[in-house]
Length: 115
Image 1 (tube, rainbow, N blue to C red):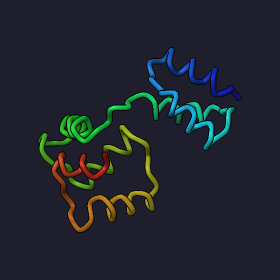
Image 2: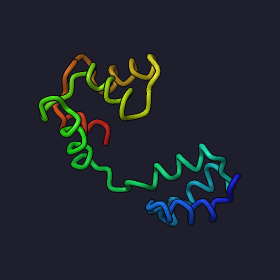
Image 3: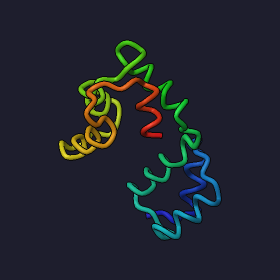
Image 4: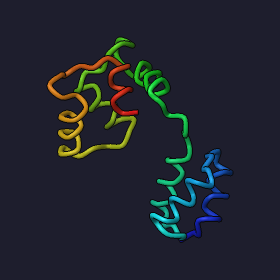
């Protein structure tokens, strides 16, 4: 276990940039002590604060097969190999919510939906 102040100092040393507002919100939501999994979550939340649609589109373009679109099976592959592995239920929810009836989205469309 680590207190939030020490955790904030530690993740800043790793390159993250948590704002004071984010730390206050985290404290109100999760308390002032963190276990290792919570520390990783706070680090992930603070690491790339500028993840907007344009940033995500660049990432998706670099991961797509043709630098233009992402097919759902390829999205599954990306998540399994480069992202957070998802359960079958989570993948079904993503397909339903994000991809809908489409099996293919342009990188821009996908970025806009998940940003």
